[in-house]
Length: 279
Ligand SMILES: [Zn+2]
Image (tube, rainbow, N blue to C red; front, side):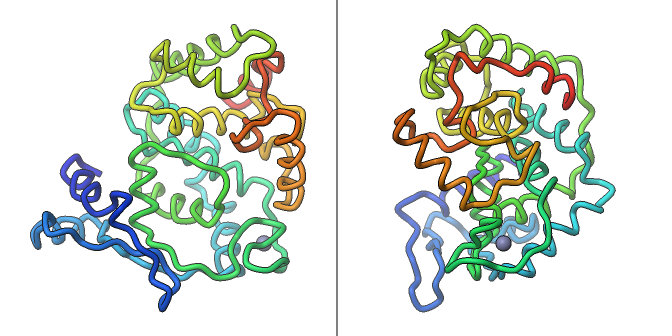
């Protein structure tokens, strides 16, 4: 996504411009007057038309996610090369892919359980989502682990890229980050760690929430351990299990940062063995 495309999408997707359409049960964005027809044509040519809605249903979304497991292009090598380009700031869009990859690693076929959201996998029973709006957040450099249906949108798009070559500089950036984390005092909280990383200017093109996303990915890998739940790299926890573990987190850690990173403390340090295994 080039700068021009980002700047047009920024005009469309600023917060106040969004509204919920109850008739169609979806979150839409108005096209502001400052966006011209030629802007819209450019977005269309690049496959980023605003309000590009798709209705996702549980079984179909799950099948599409499971199909990635046999996709020869989507490998751990691909996902980690993307992540490294994400943390150097060269390609912020790459930050989400490793988290999405880990999510499908131990995902398996099952029937929907629950009311609106599946209590097993977290996919919605049925939900209409603007694909462009979601992709825009990834191009800005955000990454999340809470809405797996977004992983589907992300993975379908990232595969249009070739695997980047990981350079020594890419790898050094991660080592620099982990070395900084390993110097944490035992009682350092996730929030304090984020502030220390900000102060050291270790992660280019990030803000607080983008740094949380990167740290969350390292936690999902098991590189930043926690006491409440196994990282998704080791075991697929059901949403019910995650919700239960999160309650525990709120009372003992008083953290509003989600698991598994929310359950990390300085004393948990860095699992270098896991780092070597993955990277
Ligand atoms: Zn499910």
